[in-house]
Image 1: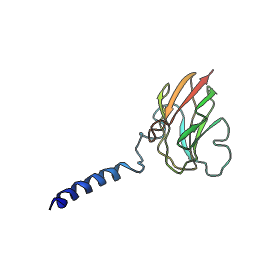
Image 2: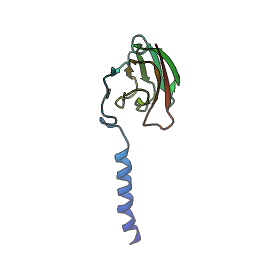
Image 3: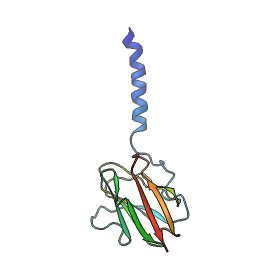
Image 4: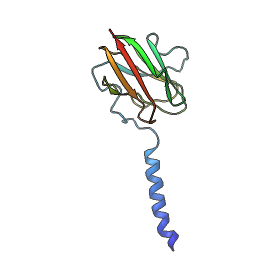
Amino acid sequence: MRRLTFLPLLLACLALVAAGCGSSDDDNGGGGGSSQPAETTDDSGGGAAGGGGNAVAMKNIQFDPKETTVKVGEKVTWTNEDDVDHNVVAREGADFSSDTFGKGKTFSYTPTKAGKIEYTCTLHPGMDGELTVTS
């Protein structure tokens, strides 16, 4: 009889875990969240991401390179090369937030002022990067 009371609790816990997994269209409130340009696209054609500017790969659950320097107005494009979903969310120095995107997809942002921008993938703790923007 003891197993019968444990089973519903176990099933409820499994349902909560399953509900927390997977991707959601509203993880971070959209593909920009500010007046600064941002976009998410499919770049499955290979080659350099974004057609100019600077490329940051998302591979092995890390940003590569972890630190990037660009000039004001120079586009930065993150490309997901992992088999798991990622996102790019500014923590400090800017206001941008991508939707969750899968392998082969990209997210681009063009900074409008000089300074340091710290960003992260909120889906993977410790997956952090830094963008230094010069004039």
